[in-house]
Length: 171
Ligand code: DAT
Image (tube, rainbow, N blue to C red; front, top):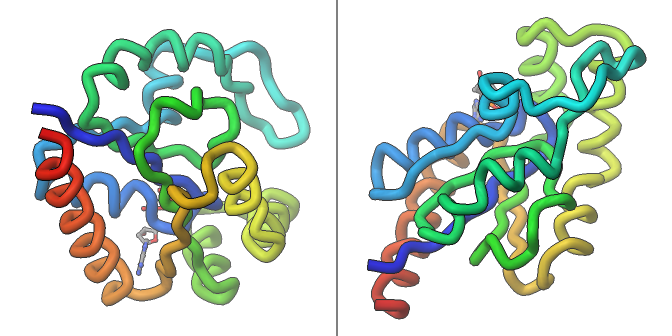
């Protein structure tokens, strides 16, 4: 059976992990957190002193995921989206969160100072949405509000419906 590949992107804290895991639990798709994958395989190519985090080795991440993506049925979660092969994804969702909600979520995750400010700005300037619109066909890129638990439920239901329809149409 053919199954679609889905990209969940957006600023850190918008709810990609929560949504992705729920989706995988309710469908027969597999959830992949690119940050965790990189950590497990040490898929890094240096260290960013300013942001105090390792720099992702994008080529190795792509090599690591390629076979799985060809099989289909993968939900990929990452806060950036311009380095994945465009052909991998059937649909791209960019989660969006209002500043006041995002600020609280990032602060309770321990983000402070420049890291907190930069992530809030990333959301204000809709950086990831624009990145997605320039990296994929515009008609497959969708923004989803992710402010409240009700938003999360609605997004889950809508994506599950989309997956079911895609599977019907492609098998
Ligand atoms: P991300 O994977 O995008 O970094 P997350 O799934 O880890 O985000 O969520 C960050 C926190 O915010 C986590 O405590 C769950 C909460 N959260 C996410 N989406 C939400 C929503 N729509 N309503 C309420 N809380 C949400």
